[in-house]
Image (cartoon, rainbow, N blue to C red; front, side, top):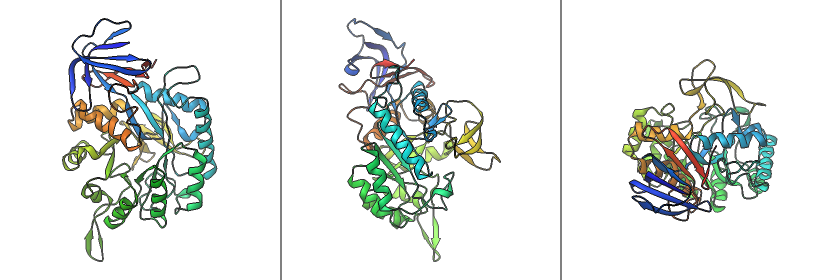
Length: 397
């Protein structure tokens, strides 16, 4: 198959008129101009051909939360991601009862056993790949818990987090923790030594605590600005919070919810002005309302979640006093980065595709358009409306 007459988005430039040839689910050739005639050619009509979007932080989509713990619905949700351009997603947990967490782990292992985490549902149809799990909590600051359920927030316990890791049997890819909590540094070291991406999240830490977390192996700040301390006073003296630490520690990645709601346009623009672009990743941090339209919804699982309302492009608690989660889909993230922040498509692809893939060791397979990589591709127009999505070269229907 050849996709021709496309603006091909590479990691360092855009080929204004080019083509990509796909063989056996992988990118076989990238070229400029008009390709030699081949079978199965698709005319992109001058649209952008981008790597599939990589979302390392999402709780659900298509009116489904991963913690509903329903394997069929998880696969339905994976299709909802793919339709909007997200071809790789890490299903993300939240603070919940331990039995629910282990139930979810078992379901994910079952889906892996049946081959459904590699981009195919039970009918062989293309869906988003789900290569591993992101655990968000339960080791958080109560003061910065945000929408996390306070009933389940606790201090790190090495016996428990080691059991979770072992139960995953290789599925854990990311763990978010507040680095200032008692026992957190040992937790960070444990996971970092296992090759897990550790992120600072829902944290009330000051600079010294963030710095110690970084030294222990923490490499990212989860949903930058959200659930996170800022400049404060200790004994009358000003000290940096987690937000300022994210700017000061050059190599620390910051993850942005790019829905232009959690971080308004001016704040997004400021972050990109002040932080190295190669240390920024985008995520949705979406709840079940993503791609499901406006109206009443549930934040968290159907069994144990909280009612909320989706309106104005974001989920809100019922009294409208604060947000209850993002409803952004992959195309919304890409559109925000290009149209609101002002990134060119190749920069967008690094922030939304390549850099997330690099953080969890998937960049040899996905995240950029390069020969030999899996043909996970998105075709979108000048307004970043998704027209076609391909996973391993197979179009999402």
